[in-house]
Amino acid sequence: MSRSAYAFHAHDISLLARSLIKQWGEHPSAPGHVQMLNMLVRASGYRNFQHFRTQAEISPNPLPSGAAVPPADDAAVSGEVKRLLRYFDDEGRLIQWPGKFSHRLPCLWSIWAGIPARRILAERQVNAFIRAGESFGDHVLLRRELVDYKMMWRTPDGSQYRRIEQVPPPAVRLLLRQLFQRRRHSRAGSP
Image (cartoon, rainbow, N blue to C red; front, side):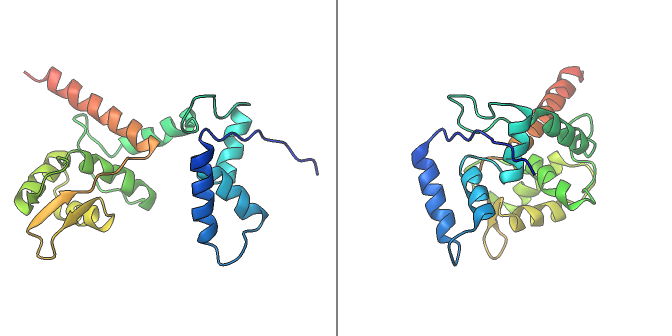
């Protein structure tokens, strides 16, 4: 069986070392060959070695010099985004809660993005922001999911909420851009 060689590049060697130390510390014993491959490529921004290998086969230079993270597979991302966009109307509002579990979190990011950052909100205010981002009528489900996925913090009595700041994954950022364009186009076309 012939093996293919793949060039590996880490933009920041210090970040690579810190990530490897952290990942190695999570193992009860020394990692094996495949685990080590996964640790190396995760430290450079890939999901796992298979993701890295796929990128390397698509492009002989998967990480151009000066890039901070590996390039996204545009064909896969745009295909994923197209599938996710079917859950949204022309105004960029969520029209149904996905039955497919893997589609739920990306769709939930659209609700998260519509909630103001760094503000303590009352439940009534949070409900209003959620309702503005959805049209299927279950803001309670969405509010609960935001808390369960740790995208939103709330007091034990549910009287105060705050969005938890985090960076959406690349595919979600592309989805959010598409939804923002829909909303902007919808507002521009309304009288």
